Length: 199
Image 1 (cartoon, one colour):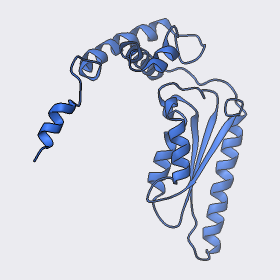
Image 2 (cartoon, rainbow, N blue to C red):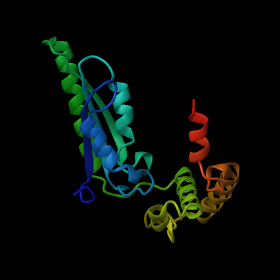
Image 3 (cartoon, rainbow, N blue to C red):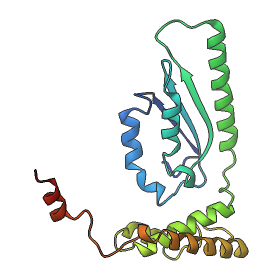
C-alpha cells in the first residue's frame, strides 16, 4: 500500500520533545530504508501537535522517517498547538489557515507522480552507500544485495561526467574514512573489558 501511494502524511503528538512511542515503533520498523530507500516517487507531509512546546524536536524526528532524504520527498512541515484550554478566534483562524496551506501544498505536489531529479549530491550519496555495502558485504548482506549491479537508486539516465566526478570524490572520502570499515581487531574485546571492570 505504501508503494502504491502517491504520498504519506505522518502525524504524531509531541511526547517529551519527540514523537510518540507508537510513531517511533513505526519508524524503527522502517529504519532499513535509510540504507535501502524505496519511496522515490512519493511525497511526505509531517504533522505534529503539542500543547505548548517541543514541536521542533518531533518534526526533526519525523523528517528521518521512511528513508530520510533518500526516500519520500518532504514537501511540508505542520505544527499545531493544541493546549487544553479554549483558544482565541485569531489563534484558531491561524491554525485553520496553516492546515489549509499544508493540505493544498501536499495535494498539488502529489499530483506530480514523476521520480525525483538526480543531483550531484544524490550521485555521491548513492556511490558512497554502494561502495560501503561492497566493503562491508559480509556484515551488511542486505545492503550488498540491494546495491550490487545498480547504477543508481532507481532506473534513470545517469550523467556520465557527474557520475565519474562523484565516484572520484567518493574514493577520496572512503580513503579518509578507512578506519570506519572492517578491520582485524574484534571490538569490544569482551575479555579485556570484563577484566577492566573488575573492582
